[in-house]
Picture: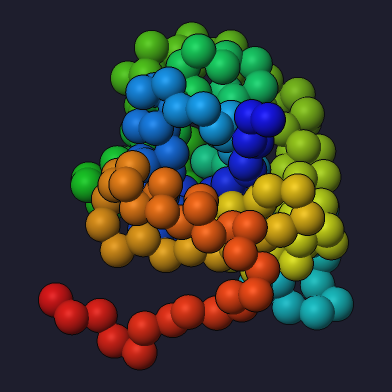
Length: 195
């Protein structure tokens, strides 16, 4: 039976970048695994108790990562053929170029470089649909799988938070995916990383 595995993302996390580069490479190479890309707002994860969630706030006070997630959702759902290019491009803008990915002009640049009709994507984001999707998918990740960060891999009822130390390593991804079903292992964490 083919596997379907979700993987959470927020463009501000370097470990999400490492994992997503591997996931995209595996998908492009014809992996037998079907990957679902699940937005998870680190801004929402850090909202103080009693404060309104990011999706109920005005756009200018949602947090620095929300807008890029909304564009990612819009592209994932409505411009799927360009999603991988945009997705990797957003991580590159943040970590290779040191750009402020909370600024719409940066997101528009990445979308244009990925071959997207920037105005069509902006209209989809402005429709409010991606914000509702972010709320629903983030909330499900927290409620169903107790997700607390990115990247978290989701399969069936299992969820595993993973930190890959190297970028884009499909072999590391495959090894981690093999461990998802090993439910007797709860935590395996190195106290230090030799470098």
